[in-house]
Image (cartoon, rainbow, N blue to C red):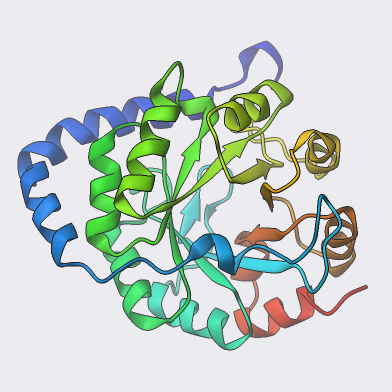
Length: 272
């Protein structure tokens, strides 16, 4: 895209902040807090996506976070016959260890109702994947049934990342802290992240390369769980990531384009 490239992340964040102003009026935070007090305890997302081993030496099959989403900014509508709970059940039946649900409306055509439906449909931990920039959204996530939330380092300058990480812990939510480059990874580590996602997609340009994971992996401290996100579509890629010591992969589009997502997931995990 060069000098004329769109900064997709900034566009999404701007829209997110505007929508939050409306949402806070419609559903006061006190109402969310009351729902959270009545909610069942969160499922252990971190345990579900962590392989056994020391350092980057890992044993056992790589864990899979299978994603449900209707659309994306780069691909448009991905699955017209989209039923979040049905897809999640198919994923769980095929061995997914956790489910990620896109709840962003304007750019991904999702919503918190999808997350609630998935949480009720499966016994796997569920991640709210969205562009979370304020504490209100973590209360939203917990009230809707999320077990984990995505925190994107590039979207959280200054002390915002540490603040949301602390609130996530207080709410019993696992935080998947996402980084794309070395500086973002260092910020995630300094903030105390125990679960780091390495996004192979540059959110500012939408370009994708698995080399991002392989380049950053050596800089992740021992004891931190690593998820490789985006651009994973072939069994040989999964095998390479597993051998390198990645704990889990987050996969959406490659599965959602399959006529049968369960068959697609089994094929992805089958090895080269």
